[in-house]
Image (tube, rainbow, N blue to C red; front, side, top):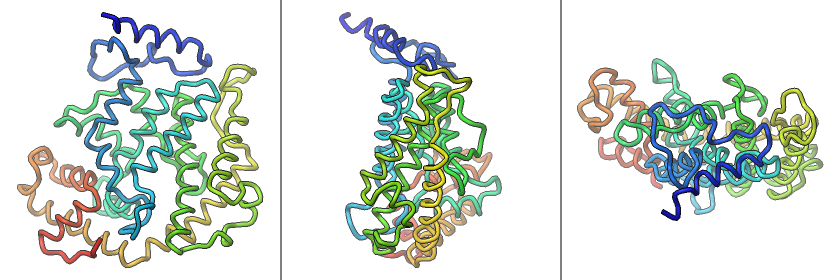
Length: 348
């Protein structure tokens, strides 16, 4: 077979990466052992499994920030995911780290997001007795829900990166969990922030919530006025600050980070978005109606578990099945389902 040795060749190429890069042949493995692919590394295989998953396809109809936007140019979970992947790969390439691993983590990091963006996540977190986190739900999807409950059986490195991509509200370099063990996962955490800070500004201006002149002048002075200028400045700073990850300079423990100066400005810009976009959007009528839809669906299926699709109705933990079902819905599906059961919803 001509393709029989391709994987080994790709693994050999990985030996030219930084000494701090994750090597696919050294993966901590999968929960269920599998024969290796003849032509893909383990991380490439994970990337492909995520792209071909049902949860990935549903991202195209899930809200990022704006509920029921009137226009085709607003960011969705899918376009956000692709932007994160592009930014993360650019950083990994510059630092000579493993692009396949950052791509797999990036493409899978938001699979567990609810319909209606963060408003949906807040509702499920309030309703569910065990709480709800989209990063934990993303991990649950790839481990337990996809492929009729078998999961995607991804490598440990990809699963860890998916789980640990979330950050605290006030600092884009803060950690909810322990820091990820791979530099590639650390890249994805920051690439996520770089992507949403910038595309959310564009969406907010498009929606008329803010004007370009409203942006903090301290941020404009550092990052520039355009989306490309802001992304370029942030990405270049991350690369410069993280240069030890290349192995070309000595460092005790290389980390992926922004410089303290730019981190402070980026955090101030993020806080500006919370105050002038996210919290304003949260107060909108459309967002409250979206919350009502999810509350209704939650209570309906808790009261009528037999109405759940068979893959979510195990009889053991009804609430878990209800949350898994609702979290996987697209915005349109949640609205349609609520409408079929008699709740008045808003027009799309």
